[in-house]
Length: 226
Image 1 (tube, rainbow, N blue to C red):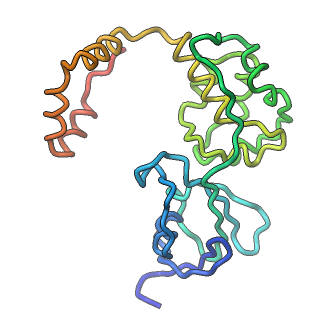
Image 2: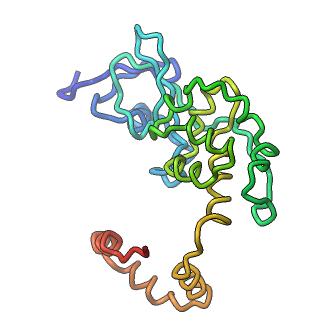
Image 3: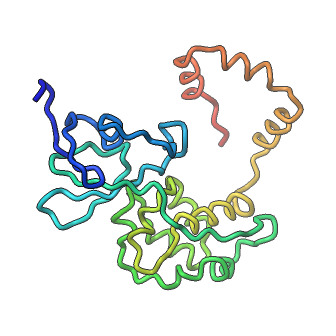
């Protein structure tokens, strides 16, 4: 054993000894796994590293994002890079923010048994069952706010006995909220128009040529519209 503290883990049933300070994601890479389907921090999208694990001697299955959770000794790990969520097709330009939209597109939400397994499994610590309750009664603004930090990993749905596709329900609520319920931002509309007309090209190029620390400072001290 090296000077580093090591942990014994099992990736898809195969045993590996990895440095104990690594996250599950970096431990997988240390063990030789190449992440083909890009996660957000690997030039893809956040939520793609959904993971189910169990510690030897414990019965309970745990859930996490592989980029957030450090390895533990005797951890049995299986990633869940895709979960078959039901994604209904709709035209946001024609649907309206009315309760029957959820009844038509995602009727399974009304089969929720209130077990709260979805909330307990969420790696973002969202009150998932609550935002589904908002969706049930057509409160799309509240559903959008409560689900704002969802990364669409699908862990909640993998634990749901009613087969609800929680991330897709939340996405619909956020789209309805943004399209119909939130007040329009004239500042944003004006800036999009300027971009379309090519008036921002010089500014974009100037920003791209700045060091990263200056870009971060500009972002952190930007003027935020009330």
